[in-house]
Every structure is written in C-alpha cells, then in structure tokens.
Length: 266
Ligand code: KIV
Image (cartoon, rainbow, N blue to C red; front, side, top):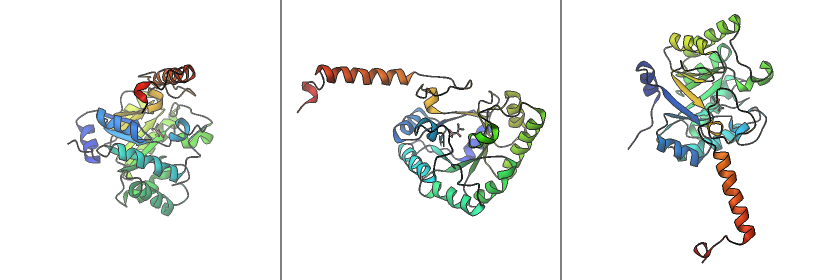
C-alpha cells in the first residue's frame, strides 16, 4: 500500500530534480480523488475563504474553520502528505499563540505540516514552530494575507530592491528551519534564482517553471471559481459547466415529473 511522502522525500525530490505536484483541497471527496491520482502533497489553503466560503479574501478564515477542513481532507487522503495553512491572526500576535495554533492543526486537524506567510519578519515564528518538531512551509512574494499592505494582488519583486528583499526572505525562512517555501506571484527569473540559491524545495504559483514544484487552487483548475482568473492559472477542466448542466437536467426532470423513475422508487 502506498505510504504518504515525508519531508525527507521532498528534499530527495529536489536533489533528484523530480518536480513536486501540489494542489489545494478543502474536503473529503476532492482529497480522495487527489490521493487516488497520486498527487505528492495536498495543501489545505486558507484560500478556502475565497473559493468555498465566498469571502472577498482570505482574512476572515478562522482557526476552527482550518481545523475542520483539515480533518475532512485527512480523512480522504490518509496516505498523502497534508499541509494546513495558518490563517490570518493565528501566528502574528506572539510566539506562544503561533505555537499553540500550529499544534492544533497537527493534533486536531491531523496535518503533517503547517504553512505560514512572510519572510524575514516571521523567521522567529518559523523557528519556534519547527522547535516543536512541526514541519513548516514558508510562503513569500505575493502573500494574500497582506492584500491591504500590497494594495491588491500584485506581482512582487519586479523592482531591484523588492527582488533583493525576496532573496533575503528566502534565505531567512530556510535558515529558520522551513523545509520548503512557496513562491507566489514573482517573476520567473527571480524564482529560478531563489530555487538555485536554496537547498530546500521551492513550490511555485505564478512563479514560472524554474521552481522545484507547483501548486494551484483546485477550484481554479476545474473552472469552479468565476470571480477571478489570474494569468498563472491553467484550466484543466470546465467542471462548472458540467455541474450546471446536471443541475439543469435535474430541475427539468423534476418539473416534468420524469424523475424519480420506477428504478428510483420503492
Ligand atoms: O491558500 C492557498 O491556497 C495558498 C496557495 C495558493 C499557495 O496559499
């Protein structure tokens, strides 16, 4: 029986130049399908706030919601490495809160690792969580929890000073003990430079093909999120159209009295 990958496998994959495949999931059925397909890692992203709960951004997502979704994903993919996002305000206030909240995602959620956003300024937080033996993925560049500071979802690191800061951020989170780092919304050349500089794997989203792995939001690749479609998203299926078609057929059959048929009746 297939076993879940570990942080050692991801390190080996970087060293062997084998790309790491990651998608977000928020519930049991999607997690099952991802495990059956052989995905390397599932991220229970706080993007759940945007694509499932219908908020404008990820900021309102709570710890209890992340625990709930992580548990559902782990039940569907018990043999896949699952990472849970630390939501806004769960790690920014102080180290004790950060450690307790990271611990909840492992103990109550059943995740194998946590992810949090930020560079140099969260290095101490990453260290505090890693010191509890909880693996951490860092997330730098376009960090959605910083939407108000960034003034929107804007590509980061285009200017020289910003690019230098991102290189320093990448170094800082790796030195603090993160076992991987998500690079979001940065120029492909900068992402490739960071990937070459670091010994830990980089997972890109809107960061070009030079990263050690890629992550996308499942609702985006399936065409289930109409709100916005960033340039970096590739749509692999139009599940939205498929689902709408099924719902329409159901409505028509109920109205016409052709459902339920004999075969659906007792
Ligand atoms: O919340 C999320 O889904 C994420 C990924 C897009 C990296 O952080």
